[in-house]
Amino acid sequence: MANIIAVHYNLDQKHTVKIESLPTSIGESKDGINDISCNLSPPASTYIEASMVDGIYKLLKEVESPEFDTRWQETPSKALSPSAQHAASTYRKTLCLGLRCLSGEITIPNNQTWNDAIAYCRAVIAAPQDSITRASSYWIRSSSDISKVQLQRFGPGIIAAAHKGNYEIVSDHFQGDRLKVPHIDKKQSFYRNARNMDLGAFFYPSSSPLAVGAFDSGIVPCSLSISAFLDPEAAVKGGSISGVAICDDYAAFSREDYEIRLRIVGFALGCAYEFGGQLVNAITDGSMLQCVGTGDQHTLEAAMAWRVISGCTSPNSGYIFGKESLEEGLVITEVEIAIHDLLDWRSDVAAGNHENGVSAAYGLGIEDPFHAYLEATLERAVSNPRSGGYAIAAIVYMHFTGVRYGAYDYHGTHGESCSECVRILRDVTIGAGLVWAPKSPPRSFEGSAGIRQLGKTWIDEFKDCGLVQESLGWFQHLVSTGEIRLFDVLNPIKEVDTEADWA
Figure 1 (cartoon, one colour):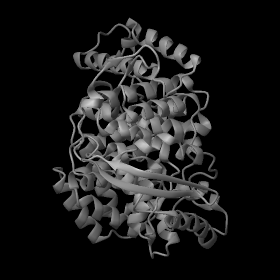
Figure 2 (cartoon, helix red, strand yellow; figure 1 turned 90 degrees about the vertical axis):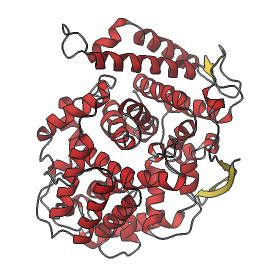
Figure 3 (cartoon, one colour; figure 1 turned 45 degrees about the vertical axis):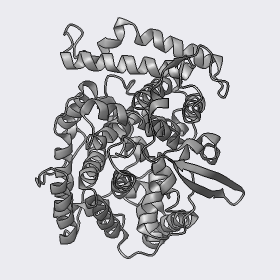
Figure 4 (spheres, rainbow, N blue to C red; figure 1 turned 45 degrees about the horizontal axis):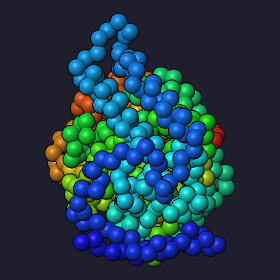
């Protein structure tokens, strides 16, 4: 039987949204999700434009042609390895399934959650947006249990603290000029590095920020996190759900990438159909980036809950895949986005972007907000070390190998390490079944070429190449040496970029 949670939240002073009786499905049967029904007409509750139908069948024709497999070839004359051949076939079958779901040819009859997921996916493809309007769309009634719980753990106060913190950091330490913050300009970082990126075969072209982002900021780190409790193939497919939210998040600079969105969302939808259960609900979580919860807490925990919603890490929870309890499943979602906020704090402040938990900590008046947030994140990770450790590794991998974040470009001085943080991280490592082996991370984009190739192999062939242990070792090095402070806005370092065009 479903537990019922009533959720109310204000999106802004002029727009109040009330969602009543949102069900939290504990042990819900997947029967309704796993039954296939062919319906040549779209469900009556959804609408699909003729142009989208045309796009779907055009892409189906391309995917079903023999040419599709050639994207997995290392060279035109070389035959595919068995693992690459299997992966190409898997991508084809799952994308075709998702496209037929989008068209309405395959559906789950009389299932509101499925209909809401389809409606949202079609909206993302047709007109992506990261907005209050998107966050108040009717389909968020079908959001995941993870999101429903997190919405109760933060409210407008924590977002106001982040705005306040973001402003006061610049005012207090940088003479009111946010571009004086040494930081990575993500747009310039993309243009510096994208042409040399080792993209997965399914993610193209490399000139598209959306295609690159869906790969190195989406499916790669998300699947590495999920591999804490799923085998490689299942983890990669589960990690693809991130692409739906990324399409909305990247809307400002990817509106023309219609065919790319169709491919990314179609594959994610096919994976959700195959998994069933809460993963279908988790698709609609991508619509909730601007949702505001109902809680009144003013704590670091509240900041983490807010960032799970605005960063849409909920689809990576072990609970979503039936592998963890609801409370256990919250950990991976919070640790992922918290590590991201720690490593991205400089760029966010320089860009005037308040959506960062460390900025919220500063706005709450917490002394040494970076260290406080780091220690709180590690404490959260050690409460479920398998998921927590994998989450840390996945996000560190993303920041040190991705084209956009450029963590390898930060250089300068830093303070001593924190013995308590080192102790907790050791416990996380052991609890995750990994080893304590600190290793210096890449110091340039070129320096990560070898490890990036392994990331491509992970996505293209479902082969575990030890990336989690490798990148957790990088984080062990950062924490045990004190180099983690290079990412602390309040710690002076060498100047990097002088613009912040792309938050």
